[in-house]
Image 1 (cartoon, rainbow, N blue to C red):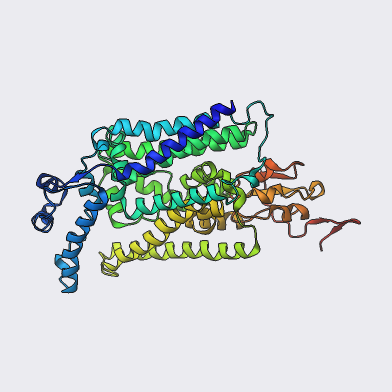
Image 2 (cartoon, helix red, strand yellow; image 1 turned 90 degrees about the vertical axis):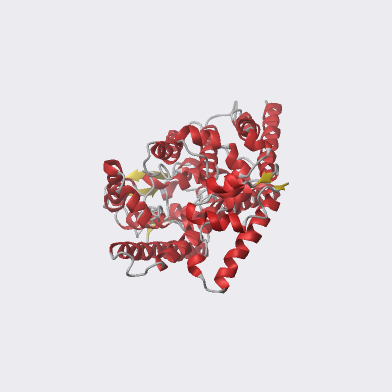
Length: 514
């Protein structure tokens, strides 16, 4: 069986290398017909003139093609900006669209084959390694040798993995034209689901969903015998596959706006942007339902469900960010910083992002109803700043790329504005708490070690103090790894939830901290 797993690792690594190399193969050739089919009518005449030196010329790589495009197109815009001819500047970024439409390589000709050898083959290899895990071992969570693993303890493999994720996210968010072949590879799937060619965001959603499903299967093996972890994993897999990936694409097929019904403002920070509101309002009854449903979730859903179940109902059972953290990021949960300094930084950062999101949204709504008289086009600048700093750099590049460096909940802990909103409700008005039995605690530290949110759980357990921290996502791993049954996740009456005078266990006697 060990040889079977080793073969799976080899297959996975080869597939990952192919996936990483695919963007750099093939040639590119821009034709007049490509320009006419890709560029907006109002820009076509100018673009034909500006890009004339490229038309009909074959480029041996996307680097050469994109470099020439940027030289010609960027030079045109730069000259206009220098002369302050802002009305003539073409603000649309055609780099990705033209690069994709001009692709002549083998991937564009046979996307099914390359999808199979780089993705399907990789999934098979990963499952060959995952399915035999813990075979013949008793039920229970296995963390054997985790701090001796190069992948799981900031070793060279972990650093390489983090570097790969960071580079992939940077290219995906800001330089998608370099990932053209990967997007072409998933074109057939996108056409089947929505009737439209794939974009970089479809590629992102596809890879994201696949990662949650495959690593979710790993969760089934690792947490075998723990019903709470199994059901929780099934939940995040279902919501990501059905609500975040399939349903939005099917809605596009029905000529409806793309919409993720489980995404909630302020995590879905663009919910109140003018194009989103107009798209929902102009889409008939279903569009109005999407708008009203989103507002109901914000105003009623979050406080009611958080009062009843704590923030775990969303962060650990529904959220896509949490789903990726709990599955793909699970091997790195022990890397979260439990220091008081990290806790202070966490509180300032996450609540600062929430304030930023609230202010930005308030100005956006006010500007919308005043027909952009309040801020004018400055609204778009505000959106761009937030989208770049928070939506892309923090949530994507840092939030996922730093899994192997800072643990799996970097975004959820330090940056997610919805987690901050949920946390405020959980801390002050909720039935959820983690109760502790200090008399049974042996100070082994398992609970603190594997807390992905950086909570020093042992400190509370030793004092017999309930854990009501706003950052707790109720993943339940602290309770699962406790060898003495000290910790228990509970939804009970609010009375006695916050016990500021816990019982202390000393060497000589049991005393009441008065």
